[in-house]
Image 1 (tube, rainbow, N blue to C red):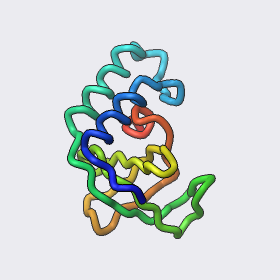
Image 2 (cartoon, rainbow, N blue to C red):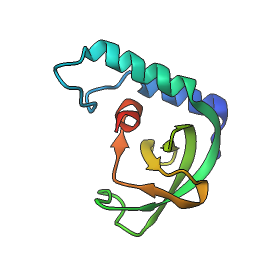
Image 3 (spheres, rainbow, N blue to C red):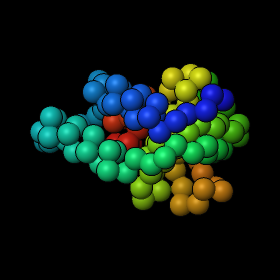
Image 4 (cartoon, rainbow, N blue to C red):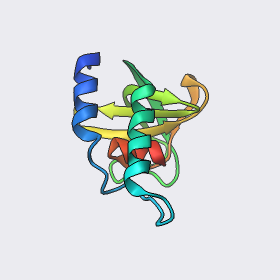
Length: 118
C-alpha cells in the first residue's frame, strides 16, 4: 500500500467531501444543514494517517468477503467510528470498534460523508 501523508489525506478528503449523493437523510431534516454538520464533524476528528486493519463482517463488500481482512489509512476517528482511506483503490470505508486491535468492517464504503453518517 502506498504511504499516505497527512497533506495527501487532507487533500483527498477535501476533494471527496463535497460528494453526497450516497448520503441518506430523511425528509424531516434539512439536507444542507446535515451535510455541513457531517463535514464539520469529520474535519474536527481528522488525524495523522495511520495504517489500520479490520475483519470484514456481514454483509461484506462487493470487493471483500466476510472473514477477509481489509487495511487502509485511518484519516478520522471518534466514538468507535474509523474513517479509512485506501489510496490504491481510491476508496473510503468505515471501520467500527473501540479497540484498534479488534476493528470490524461491516460493508460500508462510499463518500466520506456517507461513511461517517452510517
